[in-house]
Length: 210
Image 1 (cartoon, rainbow, N blue to C red):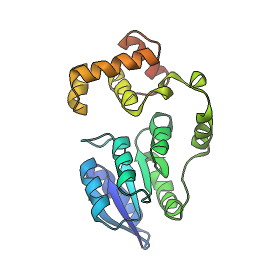
Image 2 (image 1 turned 120 degrees about the vertical axis):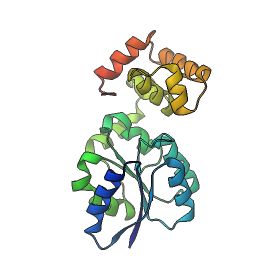
Image 3 (image 1 turned 60 degrees about the horizontal axis):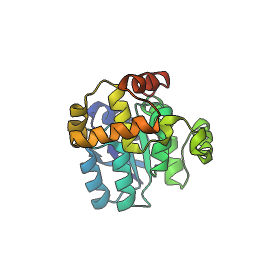
């Protein structure tokens, strides 16, 4: 029996995943978490074979939760299921330790296959993502500007581009306004830009935000 933890804050999404998994007698959802903190607690306490992790958790960024999971249970595989297309977070998720990445749109067709492959010791990534990961061997000068940002910088870039103010970003991420402003300055410097408008135009052009 493959014991599964689903970490997603949307009840309907969790129910949808459970409905898919219920059709297979060797798959069992033993716990559900609505927050990153709750997921981390279950990872330590429960006997699990795989975690299905959403990127957009309400209390913590999913990439941060993933990194913490890998610290606490290095051998526990994590499959990231996200509403975001691969170009936004997939490479960062794999770098952080995920064994696979699929979009929620494709979950109905791919979820069971992905779980079995990962629990069997493999990784579940698309050919496009595999090529992208191979391309990470490029020098910094040949990578796209947003790809040289840290995970936190990238998260703040996307929030700036979605129209959030420094204060709103600070509140969401539990950071001081001064800290967010420092991150913003680093982002502008790394991406060789001067204004939020330039950052926003870049993210829209590269389809990093809706």
